[in-house]
Image (cartoon, rainbow, N blue to C red; front, side):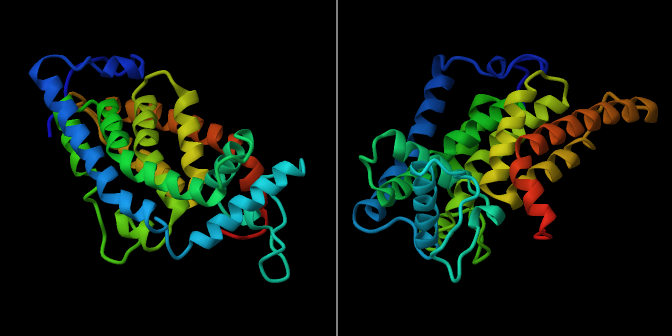
Amino acid sequence: MTTSHTGDIGDGPVATFRRFTGREGLIVIWILTVAVAFNFINLYPDVAVTDLVGNDYGMHLLATDLAVDSIARRQDFTDPWQSAIGMGHPLFHYYQHLPHVSVALVHVLTFRVFPIVDMVNWTSYLLLSLFPLSLYWSMRLFGFDQLSSAMGGLVASLTATNSLFGFGFGSYIDRGLYTQLWAMVLLPPALALGYRVLQGAHGYFWAALLLAATLMSHLLYGYMAFLTLGVLTFLQPGRLLNAKAIAEVMWRQWRRLIILFLLVAGATSYFLVNFLSTGHI
């Protein structure tokens, strides 16, 4: 793949995009449409005929219903008591819960018109289907040209691992890894915005917001995001030929990474402090 020179890294995220004009623009639109339409058509029978998510589906429904009940009772919906598991268990005290809380809030705000079962099912369907757009947008933020980014989106849904519970339809349709699905969609743009901040662009707020959302959707993916950003600080431009210049650039990037980490840690401290203090690492 080749990168484009469509904007300075210090510009806002919108500066990395160009309007879909000319033949290339039409090709990009066609590629992304095919990628998303294929997912919509291919996955629709699983939503219309059966439940899209299997295995862990029941636990995620239970967790979402718990959040709904806490909101209705005007209790702390980020750390409710789950009485249906054994002798009782503070599920959200140890488990990432942004997906459950988000769906619960929408459920309550829409006056419970849509059943929780359908909302969990259809959000899974939409997230899986729209994942190519997440990857396209992220690659554009990283600086790739439109066509390369579109091809990345085209093959995004083909990524799979053999029984390793990674990216792939099997992890979400058969295994029901609902929170991991949210993190899978959030991870690419979180990395892209985080990388832009490391390179000197403004936008700490959005980078920290997406990194925090990734962390609270799946703790391991949040860890992977910061680990990846740390590795990216070692990728230096070829124009830096002496050790002093490289060290200065790396220090600036690590300083920005530390700021990002502190912002994310602050935003998620309500969960992380309790989680770490109980020794569940």
